[in-house]
Length: 404
Image (cartoon, rainbow, N blue to C red; front, side):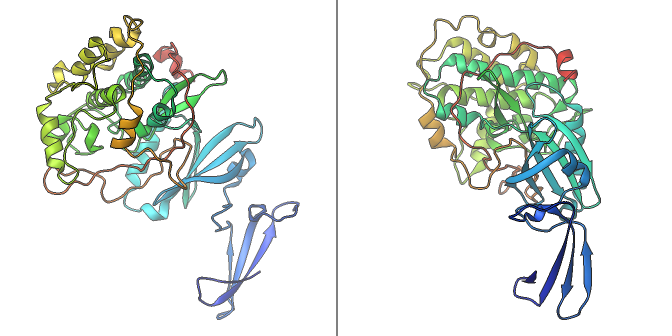
């Protein structure tokens, strides 16, 4: 095949098929290829096809999975759909280009090390990994149901009971992580994905562990997403596991009214940070008219500035609002979808993943700075909108999770 590379000298590409071919020819059927440059006459042999539509993968991957369309891409990684040959099960294949993230390998290693450890029904699961010289391949659970905001904005009816079920799922994931001394540090609606069960019910799964780390002492790295960041992170006085509870409290507040509890100016993040540090929580009318006092009491306990006074994940799970006690009399429909669309970008993005698998961006804007302009690590919305069903309240123990 005669080709011209981006307007430079033409070259010839010779493909060697790895098996029987069927028409039309798919470049994925070629495992070896060589190029001959017209100017020099030199021939270069390669073992992979550098074509975006259908990339070559290690034989271990291709023997087990059929690799399909791209679901999402980032600066240093892409996510593709894949189907297991033996079972027909769909997964997401994250392909990380090592050459593009030199000097930041520790970030990838940290995320993968944590993904290896965590196995829980409310966390996106790492199935297996294949490490090669140039790429790292991660086979991940494929979550197709959209994210948390998608579920709410697509719902025909949404009540306080639905919000309670969502927090129940999230608190279970947090409780499990904290039992392993793992802090997520980037809990937000975009990272809470809706998993559709075979019986039609749905549950939430927490994904994107790019900022997660093991807590063996006070942490001081200023990171996260500003709307959900805890005051002790901003204060740089040292923090631990309970920053995840703060983020969950912010999400619960949004679930019930459609906007965040602390809202700074779009051009001055310092205003937002000052509000978070003071922790002055309000439930303005008429937006909170139909919300129970039990829910407000729980949110206050989750958004407690004093860390020692803030609820743990277990306390959240044991709270009457989460255990479903006393909610029967409060089944009013909550009109939050419009406000969520106003305050947050909930539109699906072209070429963004439906997988619920974080695409590692590893931008230089990885951490937040307390002074000056704010840079923060935040992926764009990466999920399609799907009609939701009531979030499932599965009952299980941490011991059950370890047997997954």
